[in-house]
Length: 268
Ligand SMILES: NC(=O)c1ccc[n+]([C@@H]2O[C@H](COP(=O)([O-])OP(=O)(O)OC[C@H]3O[C@@H](n4cnc5c(N)ncnc54)[C@H](OP(=O)(O)O)[C@@H]3O)[C@@H](O)[C@H]2O)c1
Image 1 (cartoon, rainbow, N blue to C red):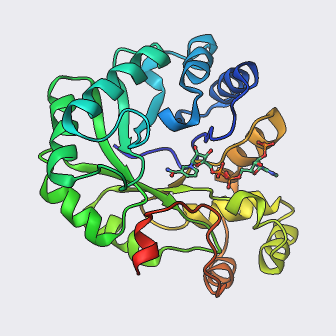
Image 2: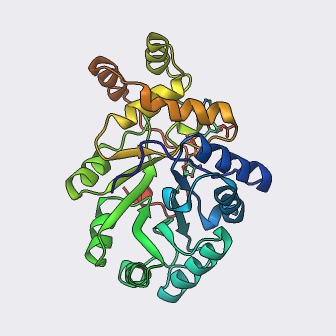
């Protein structure tokens, strides 16, 4: 299966009422993929939004993440963490569970077989990782029986991640672009503003449409209120022409807006 081009991010959407209302609004608007994490502290609110929406559970793809600093990433810690996640979300099974960061007690030989056990027990459908580089991706796949379904990683016009997108295309898994609006930093980039003016759309839509122009790439912009939710979802109707795509692809900047100790790129 393939992910929808646009899903819903929920990091820092922590006020329970606001978060559940964002999720409900998004699902009723047409979103079908919701991204959360143990680390975000909002799994209950996300679950409440899914339950409140007038959309059947089986039509919604829900992803969450286990974290070394929450329940841990040793075998039994992953199992326990997923059980708590399901309880918080109010779900019987999860569509996608990710390793949130390859840090702390992450160990491919110990952690990935726990994900296989969860697949075998029917508690998760798909296995994902976040913030992995190519070497870590190859190592994770070596230790997994299930196919790797997704790598979720910061990706936007200012951090294009060509090597990781090529790896996803080569191995046939999803490259999920997080912070696809560069946390708001794409809005002032002249090339993006020009393309947005040319099409009469927002810079957010241009960033999302540029991501969508790349095979295997989907995006999970975080938006809280109805206007941003709508703007982002409507980016699926924006078709950039080859010149637009080339202009944005030529932006020669490598800027990250999400960092943490132990991130694999700090060793590069
Ligand atoms: N796996 C990981 O380690 C990891 C790390 C970071 C993020 N993520 C995931 O990726 C999701 C998205 O990343 P992000 O939250 O860092 O940043 P982002 O989606 O790039 O940007 C979110 C910001 O842009 C604003 N915004 C959204 N749509 C807009 C629009 N159409 N026009 C103007 N402003 C708009 C939002 O405001 P409002 O909220 O006010 O609408 C918010 O301030 C996260 O929520 C999370 O689910 C994962």
